[in-house]
Amino acid sequence: MTAQEAVDRLEARRADLVHAASDLILSKGYRNTSVADIVSALGLSHGTFYNYFDSRRDVLDAVIDYGSQRLADRLVGSDDPGSATTLDDFLAQLDRINRRLHELVADEPRLVQFIVFEAASIDQELVQRMLTAYQGFVSSNRSYVENGIEKGFLRSDLDSEVASEALLTMLLSSTVGALGGQGVAADVSVSSAALVDFVRHGMGAQ
Image 1 (tube, rainbow, N blue to C red):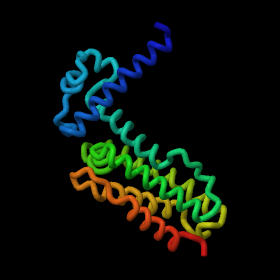
Image 2: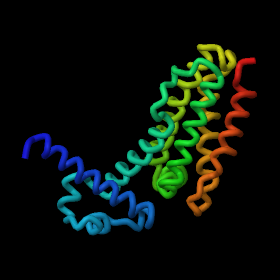
Image 3: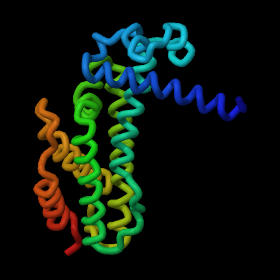
Image 4: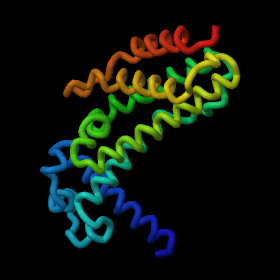
C-alpha cells in the first residue's frame, strides 16, 4: 500500500464514522447516541473510533461541519457571483440557489432540520458555531449583492450586509419553512416567484 493509499483509507474510514454518527444523531438525537451505537453501526471497535475522534462531542462537531458544508455548497454552487451583469442575471442566480436549497431539503430533510433548528440547542458552544456558520452564509450572499451594486443593477444605497442577511433569511425560510416534521420542501416555483418579486421591486435599481 502506498502512502497516498494509506491516507485515502484513513480519510474514508473517518468519513464512514461521520456518516454513521450523522445518521444516528438525526434519527435518535445527539443525547441518545453513544459511541457504542456509532461503532456498532459499522462493525468497528471503540479503539478504532478513538483513533479518529477524542469523544462523542468531537464527532458531533464533524457532523455539524458536514451539514454546514452541505448548506454552503448549495448557497454557492458553481455560480460566479461576479458573472451577473443585469438584474435578470442576478435573479436567475437567486433562483438557482433557491432550487439547490430545495433539493437539499428534499434529499436530506433531517440534516437540514438539525443544522438549522436543533444543533444550537445542544450547548452554548454550538450556538456560537452556528452563528459563525450563518455569518459565512451571509458573506457568500454579500458577494452577489456587492457585484450588483457595483454594476448598477441593484440600488446604490443598499447596505450590502443588511441586504445579504435579508436574502439569506428568505432563502432559508422558503426551504425549511415547510419541513414541519414531514420532510417536504415548499413549492420551489412559488418561493422563487416571491423571492424574485421582493428583489426586483425592493432591491433593483430603478
